[in-house]
Image (cartoon, rainbow, N blue to C red):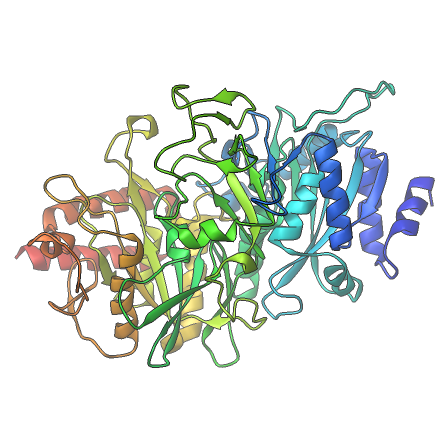
Length: 613
């Protein structure tokens, strides 16, 4: 055993398996770190890391009276978001990645990564971060180990996963784990031994976010930010987990999870998939405006769902924290999220106030007279630029949300009664409709779309497809993913959750939104739950089953006289045009498209024709 390998073995926790030691040694031999630290997840370790991040200039300690335990980080301007163009699925067969993913040849990519990672950690510490996605030991949960040279990533993983000794103990006991390798790509020593100073936010202009589905590996290089670097999040929890789920008969989904209870004692659980800018975070912490209903948060972003012993579908939140977008979060839009940030929160790329607090656009109606913006520059309302980056974030443990559900850490998960799909549609799609059956629900999820809202995004009004809100996150061919959903539905049979489509964003003839949204979104959800409970009938329509007049609770709402009529109006000609677009969209997937979805398209055309007659 070489000196490096001996050092690794001596520093590792007792009982570390040989395959873990060999893997860490191989990464260390390639990346050449100065030292190795096995993370235990303790508060003492966290405090030491925080102190080091402050000393390095990566963290700014906020006023501890205003925000105890809170810190602000400013990333490099080139490293502010996920880099979808540099995110790759390296399946052996390019068709297994499909037309919606960036494919790269796995052997060629391994060579590229070997060149990038060679010496990438010189002068730095390699941190070994064992973690659990989901409650420790649960039947739906999974384990992983991320090795990284970023202390920012370590403290982020501590919030976002169950990280530390307990996860390592389960790995030591022989449980399955996924390997994830990360480097910011900013070595502090050159190949010939010349040192260079560190920077507050090290990263590299060259970036790779790489997934090997056959070997269940994740490799990330060049970015220190968010989903590019916190590899338990989108990389594991969705791209790799979706492959595991396909092979093992479960679902890894970009969905929030809610517990919804009524004063009469009934309890329901709901999962929901929404593309970006469709109100997902606000729904995850919904405050109902109708009496009798209470909504609690099980998860705000990702759901892993597995058929349980009773044949029903059970969901867990595989994450332990919230990694939310700060701008727009306010006392008006999402007070629950806002108050969760009062302490022990990491803020990234928001603005700094003169009294040592944070600020972002939308937090208050009137901005402060002076701030230090996300780049570290002086800012006033006259500066003509955002003070916080539009993708600025907060990282906070989920337990800090007042809305957190008492069963959010149930290792067995919660039974799912309803699945929602939604997009941002100004026309066509009604406020809510129920799918006719599971196959129709899969068709609805597969065709989710939002209308472009600005010329910079493309043609205004054109549909941007985001099936199941998984477009950037499905780890394999999207058509095969739809096949998998259909198979899961067959297994669940009559115990499958009911599927509904919602659209909070429909506009009236005057161009204004017809529905108030936010807490009032509890009203169509309550209709869906009452449908599941067998309390209400419905009327068949083009899009699915719609509420009967009077069954949607609108008490206390100030709606225009014809608002409900417009919210549920279905124009056969517009739907016929949409069916044509769907057929064109499905053609992208060729022979891999499930025949069931073509059958559903045919049934849609039949309903359109019947409505036209």
